Image: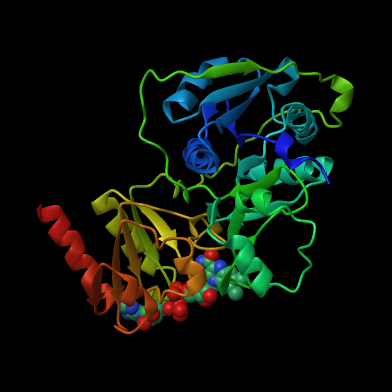
Length: 357
Ligand SMILES: Cc1cc2nc3c(=O)[nH]c(=O)nc-3n(C[C@H](O)[C@H](O)[C@H](O)COP(=O)(O)OP(=O)(O)OC[C@H]3O[C@@H](n4cnc5c(N)ncnc54)[C@H](O)[C@@H]3O)c2cc1C
């Protein structure tokens, strides 16, 4: 077992693409800030910025709460490659020994985090929806409720250990996972789940320029060209208003109505998996456990019953407006405004009212 006391600080992978930070990186800085303060007063949240000529992004990371930025720059890191990024991040973790390392559950984060965890021989919990440290009496709870042997665990270390919570068994229960025997503790977190901190313009912090050792021979693939998907992906994560449709739409033509609603209210079109599986709309619109997690100001759920897997992706929306024939379905119970009725009649009325404003 490694010496836990050697490991300190919370690291967040500050994913950037073409010199622009991903939203999830800033959300994780906010979450890392919260966790670091709960661990101890002198624990820092540090953003790990990887790329070529990306130093200028440090100011945005400080503004959103990073105490320090670890800069890993090299011309070979200009384009993302699994080998290159995994090597330099693993080397940096071995050198600086953070106790927690968080990645966004983006395509890149999901590719990178398992490689890094495997090289470090530590655990990784994917797709967390909640992270905690300092849960009172956690060890007492574990001892009373687990059949696993907990002998040899240091109570002090574990009480400040990371509790990584994620949906399990098809979303029917929430599992809390710990990393009792190794460090760092690693997790990926879906975009849109954690809250960014208020931007503090002009904030500064420590800059650590990491001595990157990377050769072309460390990278087994060569990126010849980056081709963007011809169809622009729906940006559900950043949308302030989402208008989602489900099986209650009755067919693909039902999404015409949802598109009209979205246009009227300035929203983006979302969907339940039932609508996606039926082939009524592209999978990039799916909200939920196996789709996108969203947290808009307003979420319209039209003809969506509110299965737990759908709720897992949208229940933290600020205002939920449900339109459904069934007043007893879970979505109508959860909604701030539950409109009972046929969506084909209700939606045109909402559009007319909105346009009349
Ligand atoms: C492992 C796993 C992962 C999953 N991941 C996801 C996920 O990410 N996202 C997701 O959405 N689902 C997911 N599901 C599927 C989920 O369990 C549900 O099957 C799905 O969400 C149901 O979609 P729905 O609400 O559109 O359909 P239904 O449950 O069939 O609900 C249709 C609703 O429309 C209402 N309705 C019908 N006609 C009208 C009308 N004319 N006007 C108004 N209301 C009407 C009905 O009263 C009903 O409430 C997952 C399932 C599994 C097992």
